[in-house]
Length: 285
Image (cartoon, rainbow, N blue to C red; front, side):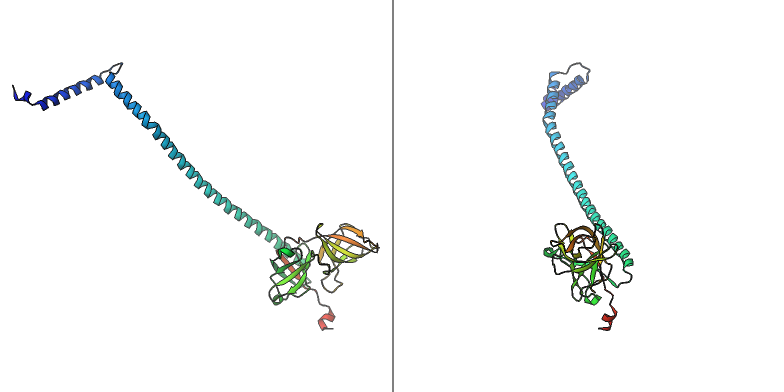
């Protein structure tokens, strides 16, 4: 027997190659139907793809959704920070606009006070327990502030200097409930009608003028100013308008309620007004 047929391994290899070539040729041939081995292999491969493809897609979609959520979270965080910054900038801008308007009003007020010596000051403290009574300003004895000087805003008079330190002063407001804090005023009509501010109606938010002569005709919307008669405040500092007038219980005098021109609750910048000295005061008599 030839040597070739004795080599079993070579025979098996050649037989395998022949079968493989036959199968390839068979598979390349145009057919309407696949053989059952081909159909089995194809179905098995398809089933395996279905088994592994769906979880893979689910995991992929989950990862993509998580990535989108994280990206959205970061974008929202940035937007929130920018909104916070915008809110802070807006608050600051509104405050600056308010301060500028207030300072402009004070500058315009200076024209009416050209004949007086004035001192600009800022409110630096206000006691929460005595909100309607006192506040502290950043000017004192060093800046020429003295006790009983009038304190005003662009709206009108708010009070007087109660006590003076070296660089700060305490202002007693007209809105104090202290009945001993009296201010002599003039109600402007055909002639000046005099009275005393002797209190503040907290509920009505109005100043109370007492000791108005019963025969005087006082009406709503009359202007109230400082009289200058008590030698404490300059004459003509605006206080407010009459809201209501009623006789006292004995009918001898009248009581008037005044709506203040100034806002006692929102005070940041004020003007301290010096009273003009009389000739006798200047000479020391």
